[in-house]
Length: 206
Image 1 (spheres, helix red, strand yellow):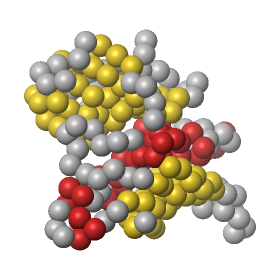
Image 2 (spheres, one colour; image 1 turned 120 degrees about the vertical axis):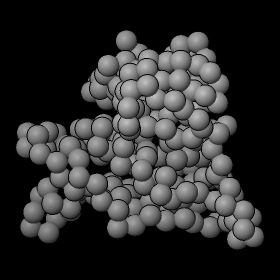
Image 3 (cartoon, helix red, strand yellow; image 1 turned 90 degrees about the horizontal axis):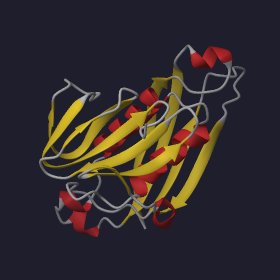
Image 4 (cartoon, one colour; image 1 turned 180 degrees about the vertical axis):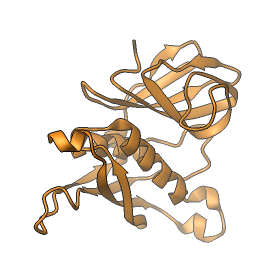
C-alpha cells in the first residue's frame, strides 16, 4: 500500500500531567504515515489523495485546544479523525491505515525522548454518530474527563450555537461564522452542508 507522510512536524501546546506541563507549552512532535492507494492521484486526480496541509491543521488544532493530559488520548482522537470515511463535503481519499507517532522531545532532558506509536486500521475508527441538535450529528473522536474531541456535521441551512466550553475549526463545506475567525465560537450557520472539528473542555454535551 502507498503512504502519504508528514514528518518533522512540531506543535507547541499544553500536554502532560506534571505540574509544569499544565501551565507551560512544550514542543510536541508528530510523524504521520497514512496508507492509501495513490494510483488515481498519480493520474492527476487530487480528490484521490489527501491534503496533508489540512491534516497538519487538524493535528495542530487538536493539540493546542485539547490541552490533553496523555499522549494516548490525543493520539486516539487524531487517529480516528484521519481514519473516518471522508465527510460528504470532503474531496479526499479514504485512508485505510495509519501509523501515528507522538513525542515530547524536551520534557525529560538528558537525551531521553518519551513517545507513543499508534498503528490503526480504518475499521477501528468506526463509531455511531449522535444527534446533538436538529440537523447536527457528531462522532466522538475521543473523550476524557477533561476534554472531548468531535467531528460534527451540519445539514445545509442549519444554525447551531457552540457551547461556551467548545471551539471549532471547519474541516469542509460552506459555513457562515457569526462568531469571528477560527477558532470558531458561538453561533454558526451552515450555508451548504459543513463538517467541523470541535474540541470541548470538558464536554460538548451539556
